[in-house]
Length: 341
Image (cartoon, rainbow, N blue to C red; front, side, top):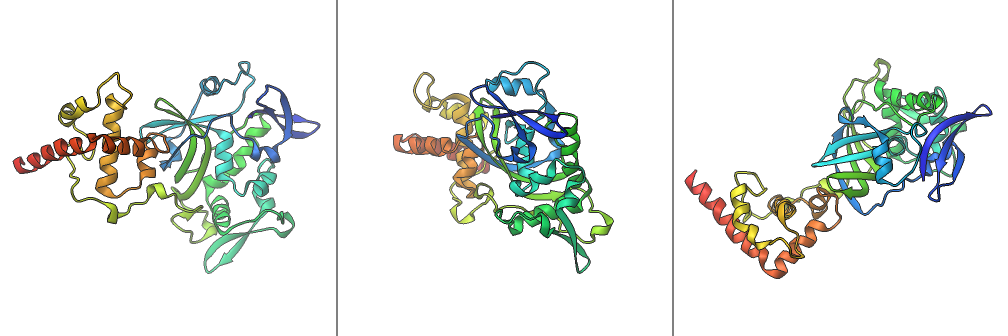
């Protein structure tokens, strides 16, 4: 489905949703949190980014990639793009809303109202700091509100640009647009989506941690430097126990230098069913990084938007004996470089 735009009908804001079969329905905006984008979820990745690097892009290219046919000028759904781990992430605004404003079933009910945050929350003082509490009459009893959700709501309530982000959703909606003004923050994100070359079309976005890049409101008192909003994804964790001392860094770091690649390129001949060319070279660099630092396979795979591409490549190379040949050649070149240095 695709949330195309917003319109006011009989005094109420409604979202225009295009369904997979091309039919259109109008929905209450507080139920749009369950609208999925028509993107496959076969690839995963994670990383850290600053919202200041995110840019608005023309949505028409995204719609064309997704084979969504909407007449020019009829779509008013913001789409963002940002570079991460060598890929260009393309993120529709609805996914940003769903990632920022959790728990969705509770918060979306107030997201599309003027001063909605103050209808949902009240400040709670605690030893010179301000946290938040849900107003009892606003709480939806069937929706669990976890500790990390309160941390997220505290960030939204106590920091200027985070509150402005919340308020901007209604402002955009009132003008017919599905959009948001991004807050000033560095965030740890995890994603699922579809990889098209160096472009990653995002289908699911989660924010696991946030570091505000601004001071809180004066009345908010002391606030944490960062907020844990979800369990840390394992793909960014290192395990030094798994690091191999036999793997040496080279002149190009863990990646293969031009000279190193020239010596092993013949092991991956073009025209075969093997991963070849620059893709094989990049995979080898990711494997050396994983083996040399102890970073998880999930990280190595996510660099290229795959769930198992790099690890499968490694296993295939080991079974065929190519990996032993790569290691012999590359590590010998690196040892010689150390001796000559």
